[in-house]
Image 1 (cartoon, rainbow, N blue to C red):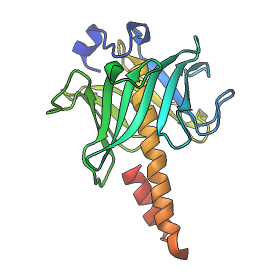
Image 2: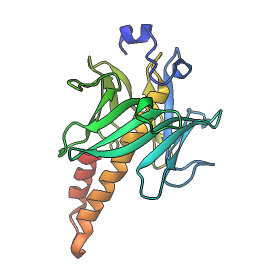
Image 3: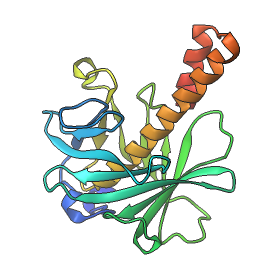
Image 4: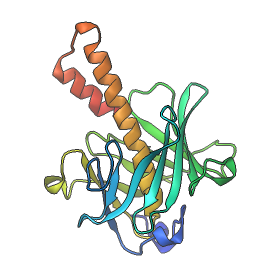
Length: 224
């Protein structure tokens, strides 16, 4: 943990989501009260903090993140294709208005050997350099989120691996770091993970052929 970051609040969504102590968030694909193909974000005791829902029409790639305590939408995310590269735009509240844009998330390159994402705050208009980076394998539980100076603010933790249900991951969040911001980035990273799995399995079994399990597993580790 970086001492400079710990001494000041890193509030992207709001100061109410910045705890003065380390947090463990659990991201679960299955949880009571959460619909299929959505994510639940809980604490280590199973208390629901956030949940996701699909928004918009059937064909729209939109997600909203709700605060479980209030039931209000705190963030709205929309996937777009920009210059052949996939981007997620994240907005404050229940809005997809450009005036409410908080940050964008995009692949570091349109074609990647492994998934890496750059995060640009709305104030970073030129996007010459990223503000945050998400890297590592979701499948292997090695994802981490770092700031532009390479300070890690959140990363997947294996501390609770033996207690986690299938399809769940644990993420450690540094003190004074906006855990709603971290949750949003992990929700988007999960979307890339799901998309990558679909692509790999479609390619592996298309045309009635299959690839060796070792090759498929290597692709999962690298691309998801």
